[in-house]
Length: 536
Ligand code: FAD
Ligand code: NAP
Image (cartoon, rainbow, N blue to C red):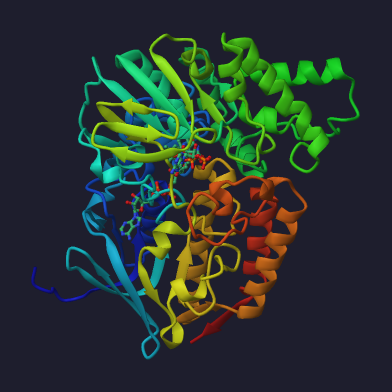
């Protein structure tokens, strides 16, 4: 394709998921010349790519939605507590149309390189469809979970049947009836897809390396009264979401799990289990994520529920997590997940005990047996937090690339900016708290902070803003200090980078929660962008 003249803008937003769409809207409202580039052919991000059967959100829909437009809130009708992927994508399509966002988005353009020009303090950004942008500010809304992990099963390419990865599921109906389907992976995606497959396919073989904790979602349709009540009180609800640590209003715990009587504790856990409420379960007591003994009380409660649900005690034991404390790997919400293993057409293969040797043309071979398959589903996860950013050749000051800067793990200031990479912002970037929370609340807060920052810089005639190395170092240390006081680093999670072979292992999320974090962001802004070097 012939090179076109660079498109000159004030700001370029990369990614058109929840974050990029809102950032585009906010900057346009603020009067900036702004464009957005998106690798996919439509808006939606996560909800555009993850079309696998069973995909749905696990934060209640009326909370997992934009708060910026009261009109949008009133006109949109969510059908279920945890709506399926097509409904969330319809919502995001509606938002794109309602706010005329599409006209500013260049679809099917994947950013491949971004170079900072120190002479002009501007970024030159190129895409794989030969577009070039010349932009003052570059805002990465590339998502924490948008770069699927490369399949790392030996000879996976040799499988003769169709192979689907949950994170890049095709936009077509796939008929699994009469088929033997293998599913590798039992994280949130696997836990959603497996029960649906079990109902559609002839047989399902689940290859599980690490069992995960799963609560029943108790998903249901909203009543008319519930919807009316939320619509009446949306403003108060949105304020409460932003005040809450994780973007979901709850009563914060006040007591240790170890200071209450056994029966009271069981009742408390049972309440969260019966409600299908992950946030309530995680927030039952003050010390579940900091004290191993406290955590063991909830972990054992959940293992007991597995034993109660699964008929075969050996299968129940295989499904019982024992290698990490509850909550230190992203826990899941499922529908009939454990019940699925009581079906005659479902087989559980523990690939920790009998590892996968290779994939062959006809199926998967473990050290114990050969499993013939018609279809292979990889629910093997993402190169989280850093994957989408590192996939772009980003070149900052003195020709240093982001890959070089982050060779030992990501370093950011507040998860929003990176020293040596001026005029570049990341929404829910590494070392921010967003992905531990209701992400929609997190991306709204970040996009608003960035918009205000750019408005103030414009008002003051400032062309260059860059995180200072000292401020960044202090933030990296603070994030690591907090994480080390918790149980989070105990798990081989994608939050730790442990799921991708060779990736540096550091806990990549700020654990103090959204409220504390955004208070700090506001303080930094109020102090004239403390920790940033501003240049006219
Ligand atoms: P994304 O939605 O990931 O969008 C990023 C976009 O950037 C993508 O469209 C991608 O194509 C584009 N992009 C990336 N790199 C480039 C490039 N180089 N050039 C051009 N475009 C690029 N969070 C919750 O809070 N609750 C949930 O219930 C929940 N469920 C989830 C279910 C699944 C299956 C997954 C994978 C994640 C889920 N999450 C959930 C997290 C979810 O990612 C966020 O809630 C939210 O959708 C993220 O929005 P985003 O805009 O930040 O990123
Ligand atoms: P994930 O949590 O990283 O799970 C990947 C699974 O694949 C794990 O069970 C992993 O085992 C297994 N696996 C990976 N490589 C393997 C290999 N080579 N051999 C055998 N097993 C292998 O990924 P995910 O399920 O896609 O979820 C990622 C995140 O997306 C979630 O944590 C959540 O934040 C979000 N999400 C949310 C929802 C929702 O309910 N709303 C749904 C889907 C995703 P190990 O654990 O042993 O590595």
